[in-house]
Amino acid sequence: MKPNRCTKRVTKAAATTFRSSLFLAFPFLSLTLLPTRASGTENSLPVLEREQMKEDLEELDRELRFWHAGMFRYTSESEWTELLEETKQSLPESADLRGFFCRLARLVGQVHCGHTAVRPPNALLTHLADSRSHLPLRVRFRNRRCFVLEDGSPEALIPPGSELLAIAGHPLAEVLEQMMEIVPGDGMIEMGKIRTLESRFGMLHPLIMGPADKYLVRFRLPSGETQEHSLTGTANLDMFEEHPPRPKLSLEIDDRRSLGILEIRTFGGGAKTQEYDYEEFLAYAFTTLEEREVEHLILDLRGNSGGEDMYGALLVSYLSPEPFGYFSRIEVTDDYVGEGDIVDGPNGSRLVTNHPGCDLQYPSDPYFLGDVYLLIDGGTFSTAADVATVAHHLGLVTTVGEETGGGYDGNTSGIMRSHRLRHSNLPVGIPRYMYVTANEGHEYEGRGVIPHHPVSPSISDVLEQRDPAMARAMELIDEGSAR
Image 1 (tube, rainbow, N blue to C red):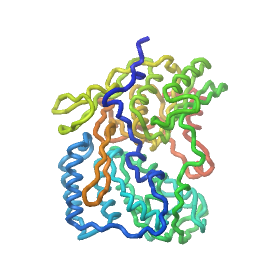
Image 2: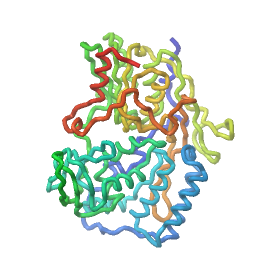
Image 3: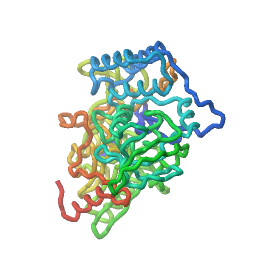
Image 4: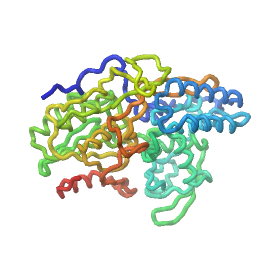
């Protein structure tokens, strides 16, 4: 067998091309970055004048054009210029930091890049934490309807399974629309944004819609009765965390079904078990599958928001019996300077030539010979979406679940630039490598991987901890059905 180039150590530019997860690229969603409540903090925000906001918008435009390799992947240059001018024309005489952040984030969202984001500065995050204004609700969306999983307020008046109808006088449709405009996402994919909103809804609501001490909430009980109650805001961020946290890497064997269930929750630096790091774990997992003569594999990448490029290529190498392409090419801007070997490409492009993901990849030993059922959802992003895309394109898997949050085309990520705007001090994360997946001629421009078997959990599934996507994969195995 030819050597496995997927396991070759990444050097030079590739060594730093860690695919930021959506939460890292859009870090105001990360719980760990929010400050704790500081007693005596002044509950006021800096105010920006119109000319200052305009200058920051122009500075943002220059930075994006200079560094963002995928700037005009989904939005044309003329469309962007028009959006920028509309934003400048709509600026008020003055606005506080939260108001300007929302305007800026809404504009950046039009780039349609899930790795490009504006992060609120600490002054704004501290303000929200100090004012105890987080909305104390965990929610789940279903067909753009919002249902309560937990009311964490002291009142605890909203039963699980209730549908939210309005918050602070704003209909849920309006709330969702405004939040969706600000949360970044790849292409035209909606499911990725929905899953992001679910995980941080209580934190995002005051940031986007405005903070309050109490929120008047109108909701419909599971019985159909409509009620309205006032909920006290909270500073407790713990309720938004996953409890208990699931292992990053795991393998289970069901001998009765001749089935392996391989779950990979991250391709990042935390991809390890107590005994193995990522590469060692994959070798152990696929050796175990071969030794146990397992015929079916369920590979679960739901909620995996990404990580290192070549971790993804390595996983695909355990599924493919033939050499395969992973990235077709990686582009940078005309003005790009920095790490990597850069050459001029066709049609005026500039290409990174020393990234191993652009090389031909070879099967790993032992690669899996049986049927593979890949579980995906809106949280399958970045490197995880690359894996799903390449495996889907090569016909290596039967996909079950929801459309991925990451794009079928590839994404713009890799080497990231962090820039703070002069007047607002708002940090902007700008990715500098535009990855093009090795799947030219596909039919999914601007979309993610569309599953062969669409399955999305109902609210009762979530509340009763049922897993319909896993159940569907089990059914396909039991029925002997495949594509």
